Length: 350
Ligand code: C2O
Picture 1 (cartoon, rainbow, N blue to C red):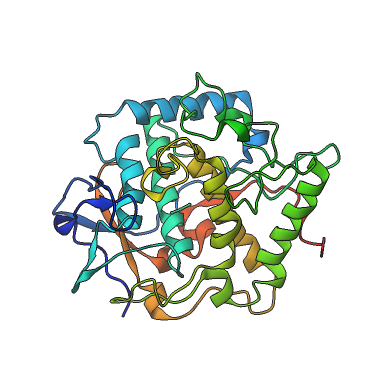
Picture 2 (picture 1 turned 120 degrees about the vertical axis):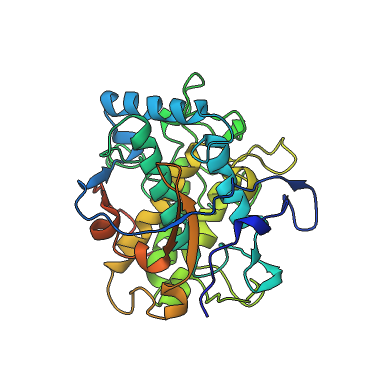
């Protein structure tokens, strides 16, 4: 069977590390649950590449993010609560309905892409609502493309809009050694190797080619293995992009001087950093690109995937139940797309 949406009344303390320190991440409980229905009449939103945004866009984004930070902590749309959404679904706060000893985990399996897509969708709609602009779209961190002289559209370093310490897009818990112009290491394993920028660029593009093209020829490899009601992640595994660069970049961004790699380096705290959402937009963009690459690269058709459910609070602070199937046609059903840029790794077979 498909994973059922959590019962919010059973939410318990989340575990920062398995069996370790705990933290409160439960959302407010609501007895009224709406069923998600796509609103296909709304205007298409275009998510811009973070390194290409206009001043006008940036002003809007900062305003929206500041307003989200200013919401009372118990408002499900506040920044604090939005970060807790990730914590609860990822750090063992929700027992599975019908399987009280097994907790929901949306990583390390085929739930990874759809869960994060819907999470970003609601986050984006909340920001848009706060500035009364339903066309507002989140930017993406274009980490699959170098910030080079000849490839003008890319961005391996953390995008500048996130590093202004006076901005609501800033977060203090990041690795100080990984600030621009340092290029992101898409294969980062926890230690810095001092390679020159050309070598880093070549390595990063080779990782992208492997994780998107040569190593991701089937849905199982790309999305990750199946995870159904009653399953634990011991029998599933992560897809190529979730593994790398997704995980590596979390680790690369987090502050190694914090106990648990806060903020980006741990699931429970990652959503506190606005950069998280830009990182995940690019992960999400990879799903769209992958489906254009041909062969067997198509969404799974198993109804235990399509009918898996999640709960989120929407822009009106109403609780909404959605299914994986609501996420698979983003342009048609969720009404967003990505600003096109060069995809330099596509034809650079290492
Ligand atoms: Cu839910 Cu980037 O992790």
